[in-house]
Length: 72
Image (tube, rainbow, N blue to C red; front, side):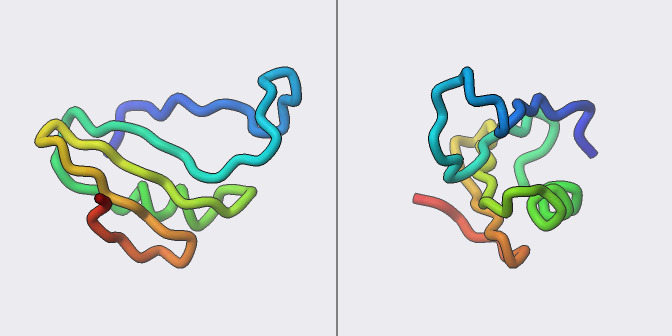
């Protein structure tokens, strides 16, 4: 499990973000997405994918349906 996830408020209009397309975080304790990553994507509003970077320089994508794929 993650020790923490740093998240920002997507409703905060002062950031200048007009439309949130995806989230991103890095893993430092493991090299693979975890079950909590899928849970986070499935329960987050708005529903957007999450990109996960790992120490071995791979990027995984958790889609809004819960599927995980290796990014490019």
